[in-house]
Image 1 (cartoon, rainbow, N blue to C red):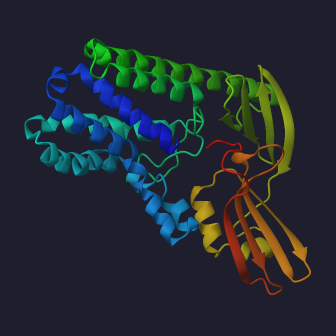
Image 2: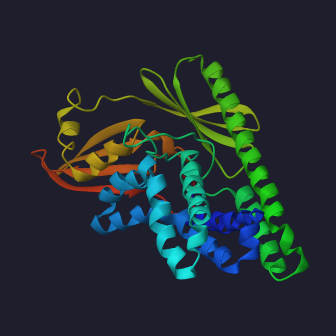
Image 3: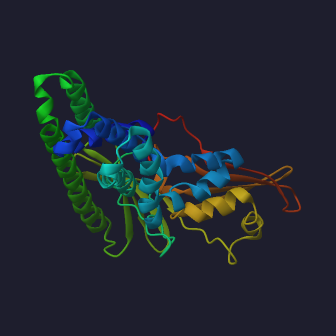
Length: 330
C-alpha cells in the first residue's frame, strides 16, 4: 500500500498493543513499541534506496528480498535490538519483537492483496503473488484507522485511555472483515467475467478501484487480452488486444530490444505482456506493456525502446505514463 497507510497502520498497531497490560503500565515500553511498529510498518519498503541506481534497478528489487520470508524475521530483530537499548526495555524484548513482527507481516500482507504483488515466498520461489483485492490506497481502511488514531490522541492522558486496546481490537476486526468482503466480491466477479466471455479456464485479473461498486478486469485467452470493467455488477468489454509473441519466436525488431536494461527489468516483473512496434524515419519504436494496468483504453505502465535502422538500442524508458494521483492505484 502507500507509505502513508503503512505508517498509519504502524501507529494503530501500537494502539492495539495496549491490550497488553505491561504496555499500559510502562510508558517506556509503549514508546518503544510505537517507534518499532512505525519503523517496522515501513521497513520492507527500504528497498526504495535501489532508485539511486535507476528506476529499472528499483523495479527489479522492489517488493522482493525485503518482503521475503527471511526478511519477516530479520527486520523485527534489526529494529527491536537498538530500540530495547534506547528505551531500556530489555525485560520486554520478546514483546517488542512480536509487535514489530506484526507490523512487518501486516505490511507484506497488505502488499500481497494489491495488484502489483510481492515476492513474499522467496527464497523458495521468485514467483510474484498478488490477490488483486485492495487498491494502493483504500479510503475505508485509511479513514477507519485515522479515526482510531485521533481518538487515541484525544484520550492519551484521559480516563478513556484504558480502553485504547479494546478500541483498536474492534478496528482491526473491522479491517479484516472488510478485506474478506472485498476478496469474496473479487472471487464472485471473476466467475461472472469468465462466464460472460465463455472462457471458463482463462486467466482473469480483477483490478480494484477506489469505488466499492467498480472493478476493472483483464482476461487472457490463447489469442487475445480482453479489457473491461464491472460497474454495479454489470460486465462490459471495453478493449481487446491480440497477443504477440516475444522472445526467440518474436519479430527481429522485438528481439533486438531484449538486451535493453529497461526490458529486462520489465520482464522480471510483468505478467500480462503486450508488445508492439512501429517503424520511424530513423529506426523503430518498440512498446512493451503490462495490460493489467490499463485505464481509459490506455496502457500506462511499460517500457519504450528506441532502435536505429540497424536494430541497435538507442535508448529505453521504463515507468508509468500517468500522474501519480491518476488510476490505476497499484
